[in-house]
Length: 386
Ligand code: ADP
Ligand code: MG
Image (cartoon, rainbow, N blue to C red; front, side, top):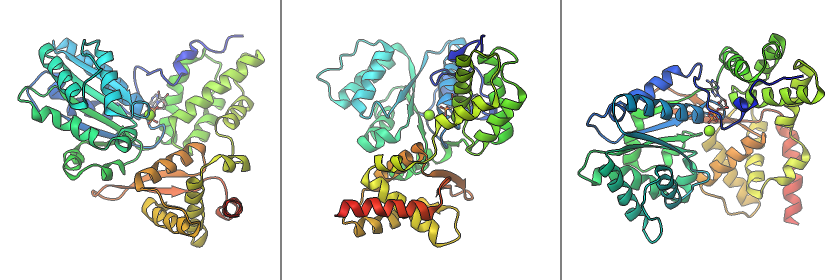
């Protein structure tokens, strides 16, 4: 029995040709970069996309890149978009090497300093009259490893007299990344932040329906099954989770040789995607992650609060560090731990807007009572003390 029409269309690398409920954002990006796309004189552009996991940040930027190249080419403009994952390319040098390779330019990488490499790249672009939009995904990775990298990248166009040839599209899961940047870069960005909020249930339904129609043979995924996946994913507002469950449910059906995906396949799929927190997961997280979790449980146990702010948590974490004679990590590192804890499923980070001044991150424990987790953590931390 065939289940999939085209399974690859559910793979994480695949970028769909349209993104329902992100059309406005796509147009906004095109507007932000329009001087480049239409080959007009202008400034170097910097835009930041933020939003929670599975909000479509990566897909949106890649689709934007493809559209920007397409429009530019119709207008006779030489424009390239290159998408780089800064979790992998954490240094400016590695990032620039990747750009040079992607452009197939003859610039030798070896023996050049960062700045020389950057200037060679700019010479190359100027000679070819080519404009480059760099998509820096998971940009926190680069900022942490080499804080001055973004500064160099954003200043280079101004240092040269020529038409600006390099613009940046930065992508980050958290808005706090702005706080790490220096004042002037931050000011530049202020007006160009695109926040993607979590998808609601209706939006997820449209998204899943569309992705189903691309990947599955018609009729394999019933409306009932679709609703079940929507319900599960709506709690997180996370399209990645929805698509992962969808694909795995399809695999379970395929393996059983049946001709339809059943609700039971979906439940099995969901159980295998993000398993519920188990004691053994606690054993695998680092000392600092345990201290952060401990601080979270303390804040959530005390009051009737459902959410806490990241700055509140950071102070409480520092207190916990002192109790366990540990030197606290800096704020950036703290954020990374938070993200890992979210990836494993211990905590949830929500970003809520608070007027014009911006947005704040709130942390909560979605699945386990704070008191139980607190007890488990204390036992583990005490053990280490002995
Ligand atoms: P993020 O980078 O914000 O974590 P992704 O861009 O990786 O999220 O999106 C997660 C998954 O959901 C990807 O497979 C992506 O193709 C899909 N997706 C996200 N938004 C949409 C949408 N609006 N329409 C269709 N698929 C989407
Ligand atoms: Mg992403």
